[in-house]
Every structure is written in C-alpha cells, then in structure tokens.
Amino acid sequence: MPSSTIRNQAYGWLLLTPAAIFLIAFTHYPAIATLGQSFFSESTVIRPAEFVGLENYQIMLTDEVFWKVVRNNIWYAIGTIPASVALAMIMAIWVNGKLAGRGLVRMAYFTPTILPMIAVANIWLFFYTPDIGLIDQFLSMFGFSGRNWLGNPETVLSCIIVMTIWKEAGFFMIFYLAALQSISPELEEAARIEGAGRWYYFRRVTFPLIMPTTLFVLINAVINSFKLVDHLFILTKGGPDNASSLLLYYIYEVAFSFFDEAYAATLTVVLLVTLAIIAIGQFLLMDKRVHYR
Image (cartoon, rainbow, N blue to C red; front, side, top):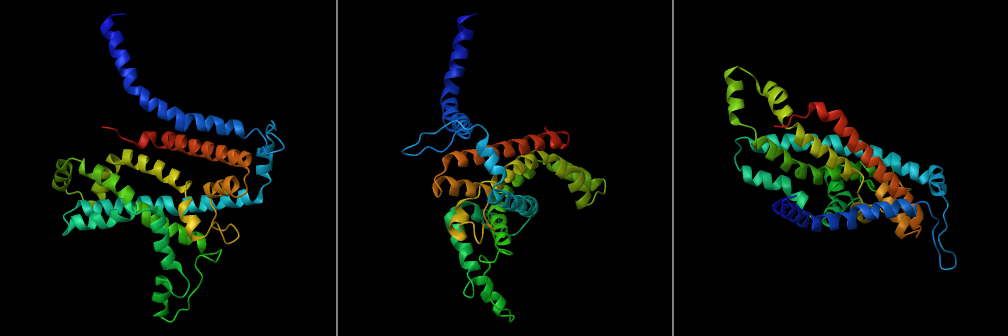
C-alpha cells in the first residue's frame, strides 16, 4: 500500500477519533451498560446485585403504573406530533411569502424554542393557575368559573400537550423554512404559467420536495414526545394520580425517587427499543415518498 494512502487513512481516522470517543462514551457504552444492568437486581449496602435474568421485565409487565404511563405517552404523542408538524409547516409557508414585518414574525414564532424549558413551564403555570391564571381570568370575563386545569385528571394531559405544541412548532418551522427556501422559484413560475393553483402547486411540487425535511422532523418529533421531564417536574410531577406522567419521567422517578436503578434500567431499555423500532419504521414506510435531490 502506498505511503500516501496510509497517510490519508491515518489522517481520516485521526479526524474521526474525537467524535468516535464521545459517541462510544456517551451513547453506545451507556446503552450497553443499561441493558446489562436490567438483568440484575438492585444492589444495597448489605446485598450486592444478583443476576435475575428477565425478572425485572416480568415485574414491568405486571406494573399498572407502567401501563398507565405508556397509555399517557401514546396519547401525548398522538396529540403533539401531528399538530406541531402541521403547524410548523403552515407557519413556514406563511413567513416564507411576501409578508410585512416578516423578520419580526419569524422571530416571534421561534422565540418559544430558545426559552429554557424551566422558564416555559413557569410561563404556562401562570396560564393554568386556578382563578388567578390568565386562562381563568379570560374565561371569567364571559361568566365562566375557574377550574384546576393541572389538578384535573381529565384536562392535565391536554394542558401539557398544548404547551408542547407551542414550544416545538417554532423549532420545526426553521427546518421547513430552510427547505422551502431551497426550492427553485422557477418551479413556481412554471406552475403559474401552466395555470396551477396554490393548493395544487403545494400538493404536487412543494410537499414532495420537502419530504426529506418532513421525515427528519417526524423522527425528532417522536423522540421529543418520549423525553419530556423538565416541564412535568415543574407543572405536575406526574400527577394527579399519574394522569400526566410520561415514560421518561416515570424512569426518573424510579431511579431517583424510588432508588431502583435496576428497574429504571429495564424501563430505559424498553424506551430505547421502542424509539428504535419507530424510527426504523418511519424510514421504511416513508422511503418511497422521500425524494432526494
């Protein structure tokens, strides 16, 4: 092998090494360690961890709180993913056109994204506070009495969903806006010459061309729907009666409130496998609809 080829390969590996070290140290190794820990019992001061096989997974299958949290997460995903993605697309189309004060509108849409999650939770806590909150103050103007939005099992999850859509739509909008600006304006001019309407142009030209962005946004939206912790910690702590608890928050409770790291590792493995299956499924289902240029 020529020395120049060896030198180029060595140079390439040197460039990859820092990223590979971080990827292994903070992604692959923790995942493998978590999988291994799920097959052991929780260690204590007087009793070391013992290999228990699938016992933790059997306990999980009989855990009523786990199944309730899973149902909550499914409804949360159904409520947040389509709404936030659709709203992001609409906002991107709106601010991509000839709009007065377009820069200010873009900034207003994107502002919730750059706010810290704790700050967002406190803002919406002010909205949802019974009687003195902004929502109840507004409803009182029309004669409606206040209600405990976050203390009612029937409304608490919907409140979390609304807050999440408000925060994430602006983030997804940026990706759609970049995709729209990469589309050649000549396509729209040709469509107008041919007499195509706006809806037909969007359905036949714009939407197919931004499908790679849609796939990327959908995968991120799915991951985000399973990683909510900060907002729940401030707003509800999973209550009332686990009505707003989601899977990652339940893992946090098991690990740091109940101090059962082995069971928390088991739940984490289930979460990782679920996200992997969903991501792979999205790629397989949408591959034929994604058009790369």
